Image 1 (tube, rainbow, N blue to C red):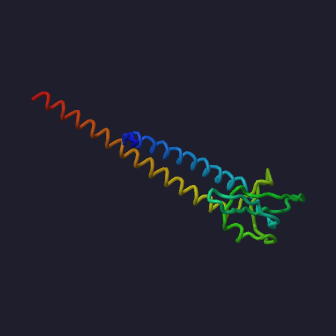
Image 2 (cartoon, rainbow, N blue to C red; image 1 turned 30 degrees about the vertical axis):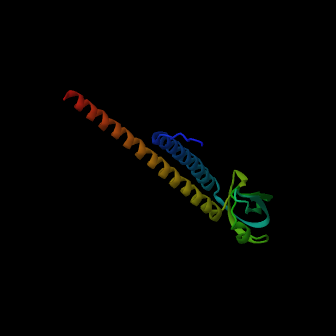
Image 3 (tube, rainbow, N blue to C red; image 1 turned 90 degrees about the horizontal axis):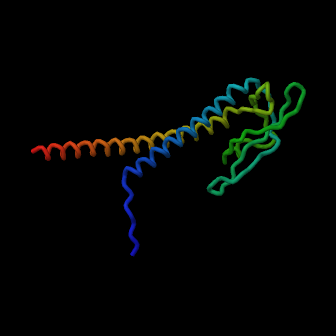
Length: 161
């Protein structure tokens, strides 16, 4: 029969805090990147969806992102946002026209509010997971420290009697 070693709850709490902090850092980086794209892309152009890029997500389902073709300052560009979702294959069909924002200094950098909003929702989810994991881990650690202090105080008072 196999015996399993019991992992102290403090180690589990530390792991939870570390996972929480990592989630919060990653979500902050993604959020900053989205904010930067929103600020950089100030020119509005009419773009036509000419293609779609696909990939499979971790569950094996196909996700899509539209490829836009547009003209800016007499030059034609094709670009896409590196954000994929299953719904984009239904919503953004070839031939449709959309108003997109581009970066005037780098016209291949584009920003589409709808697509970016879906990414922001995922970032919020990551922030919530980070806060919950980190918070629970901190509560467990604080509880363990308080318990340790109470036990030490009780031991000290019982020795003096």
